[in-house]
Length: 281
Picture 1 (cartoon, rainbow, N blue to C red):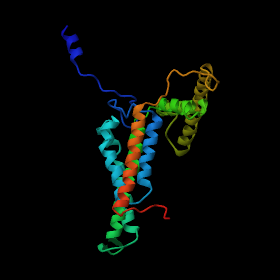
Picture 2: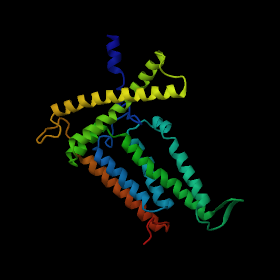
Picture 3: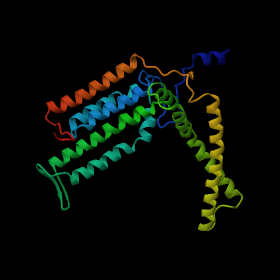
Picture 4: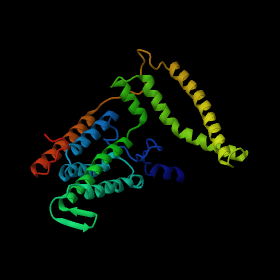
């Protein structure tokens, strides 16, 4: 009885939709429950707000909203920091190159021989740094909350993409991990039998032999998958769906908020005089 009471009083476990994804989803939020097409639309809208102009204000508005809205994504923030640490580093490298190569204007702030940085070049570097993060973070974060199965259902049911193509791509993406495991198992088995290693020629032969084995296994698995899809009437007219892809009120709210942020970024850049469109006209 005591064990039963402990189980009933224990806190509910966090929800993990797909443990194999880039960033685990640890809880369900209204944004996580949105349709996959809505998440893609939100990411693209936010990217447009930061893409139209190379300036600090518009990119800063989009990035600030993205960082504020991270709790709504339901992601494991600790895992996100561990796996996305390269984003600030990449943005910093892009900013460094911009600071060195951008047109020199304004007061000279750094003059170390070949390295010359001015106020104008540093402003451009800061804009590139923030803009890179504003473009990458929304897409990666929202894509991490998309279940591939839900995405395939949405692509077929709403965008009317070919069922056979979409489901085949989904199955191939799900089998990539299995392909890696099989290659590792095959390599260990060949080493245990003494047919791997040695000279470069022997390693090359072993490599091609392993690739041939994987090819045969892939063909067999593809044949089985094709028979299973044919048995489930994929690609036939009138086929019903067990999982219905629907849009709800939360989808409209998410798109409306993203459009508002995009408009705010553009208006703020115009109001502060920092608007610098990528296409002059």
